[in-house]
Amino acid sequence: MHVVVCTVVHHPADARIYFRQISALLDAGHRVTYIAPLTHDQNHIFPERSVASLTAVAIPRAVGRRRLRALRAARAAMAAHAPDADLLLVHDPELLLVLPPRGKRPPTVWDVHEDTAAALTTKAWLPRFLRPAAAGGVTFAERLAERRLHLILAEHGYNARFRRTHPVVPNTTYVPETAAPPGGPRRVIYIGHLSPDRGSAEIVSLARMLAPHGIAVELVGPADPAARAHIEAAGDLVHWHGFVPNEQALAMAEGALAGLSLLHDEPNFVHSMPTKVVEYMARGVPVITTPLPLAVALVRTAECGFVVPFGDVAAACEAVLTLDRDPGLRLKMGARGHDAARQSLGWPADARAFVAKLESWARALCPVSPHEAANRRTRRAAS
Image (tube, rainbow, N blue to C red; front, side):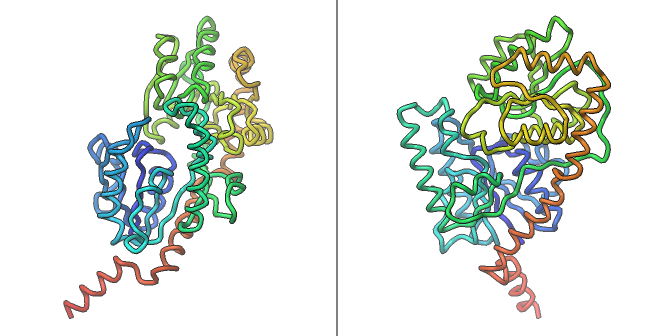
């Protein structure tokens, strides 16, 4: 099967898109053409993948209000590569506007990463007076997409937004057989996109409170302009690594006192499991999270961390100091989180279901794929 995967918003090494979904397709023996905002040499971004099974097509990235050039490039790239593919998989709602015509594209799947309409309420680049209209437009686009495309969802709670029930491909992760023990410098870590609604100001404040205790704060992930201002104002109080590919980022978490997830009480987060919570657990790192429902259920069930009130930096600081004072508690919480992740949060099982679903959609509309049809024509001509 040949799958064209396209994103115009996400980093090309995005954990869900590349490290989980594309890797699953490649591991299953399928071929992938990846249309993404590549800014580095392909072998630098994907060092372990051969060009025979993965073809990368570079397009500009859509950032803030600067989207038109990127969308035009995405439309041209999909028009060039999708007609010969067995399946087209898109990851951004913006791409719904520039899909090839229905007769010139294979079965098409939209991966719904978030509650897009709710997420618009936190986008600083979108003027406030436009947000309600934009949210309404997104809702209309979702209804239209449901009638014309296949959908997969990142969370079970997203099904409430649609008329039909759609398959869920959760943001589970790769879980090592054993968790790394606590060790190295005393530190806490945050992995993921940095923005005010994800707690960038609170994390910087936490760094100021922890500094007198000799505990460092590490940040791993890209930052929007407001979060970057918070980080720059903190100076040496935080160590910001910027974007790091997912596998390396998770290795950096190992041994930390705790992993932070200080997200705000925003509609976009209410029905979502912060992926970072799952990833900290998988690496045996205790979690400190705000009381978002799915995070609370997971952390309290596994007894693998602390739940602190929204915006309560002092409570987050006390949780870190508790783990620092009690190495035994730190070890037990990390081990419990790792055990829970190994039992039910491992990606490989979800990967098999994901690949099987895409294969079934490709076969349903096209029992003989374009790729296989071309091979058959070649064999007939040679005989």
